[in-house]
Length: 380
Image (cartoon, rainbow, N blue to C red; front, side, top):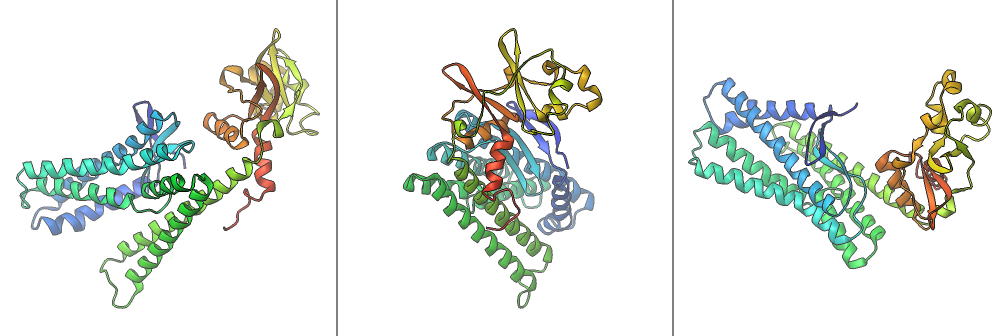
C-alpha cells in the first residue's frame, strides 16, 4: 500500500501510511469511549468525541515534531532524509543512511525524545496556566497531551534497538568499542530481547492467572509492539551483517570495466534485441559528441515496450549524467549501494583521475548479497 503525501516541512515530505488510519481510529475510539469518560464524568458523548479528535490531532502533530527533530539534526550532519511517515506504530523519519560517527548518531537519536519532553512541559504548563481544573474539557485534554508526550519520551528512551533509546545505546557502545558492527550486534540483540520480553508480558497480561488487566486489547497491543520491536531489530541485525559483507569489496572489485560506448541517437532496438537475452547485465555508456551523456542499462531498456524499441533512442531511455554520482574505485561497495538507493539508480560510473574506468550495477551488488545468503528469507 502506497503512503499518501499530505505536505512537507522544511523540505521533508510528510506521508501517511494506510495503516495509520487504524491507529487514528483506535486511539480516537479509546479516548472517546474510555479514557475521557473516566477522567471527566457525566458529559455528553459528543463532547468526549470532540475532545478525542482534538487530542489525536495534537498528538500526531507532536509525533511529527518528534520526527522532524531527528530529521533536522540528521540533515545538519549531511545525512539524507527521504520523508517522515506516520504509520500504525506512530511515526518514523526515513533516514537513508547511518551516521558515520557515534556522536552524530547519539545527537540524531536523542533529540527526538528531547522534543517530546519539551512538548510535555509545554502542554503541562498550558494545563497549569489554564487552571488545572479536572472538571474542564480543555484542562483534561491538555493534561492528557502532557502525560502522553512525557510517556512517549520515556518509552522511546528504552534501550531497545531500533528505537531512539536503542540507537543512543548503540552510539555509546560504538564510542567504547570503536566498532560499528559490534555495537550494532549488541544493540540489535538487546532490542530483540526487549521485544521477546514485551511479547511475554502481553501474554501474561491477557492469559495469566487472574488476568492482570480488564481490557485484553491492552495486552494484545503490548504483544503487537513487542513483535514489531523483535522483527525490526532482527532486520537491522541482518542489514548490518549484509553491509559488513559488502564492505569486503570496493567499487573496483565489482565494476564492469570498459563497457561499450554508443551515441545517444542510436535506436534502443539495435542495442537490446538479441543482446539482453545473452547478457541481462548489459550496460552502455551513452556519449554526445564525445562527452558522457548518461548510462543505459538493460533495466532502462526493458522498461520500454518492445514495440517502441526502434523509435526510442538511447538518449531518450538513458539515465542522464546529471543524475549520476560518480564514485571512486576505492569506494566501499556498501556505500555505493546506499548512494544508489538514495537516488533510485541502477548503475553508477566509476571515475579515477577524472576518467571513467568502469560502471558498477546494483544487480552486481545484490548478487554479492545473494551469494552470501542475505537475500534469502531466513532467521538469525
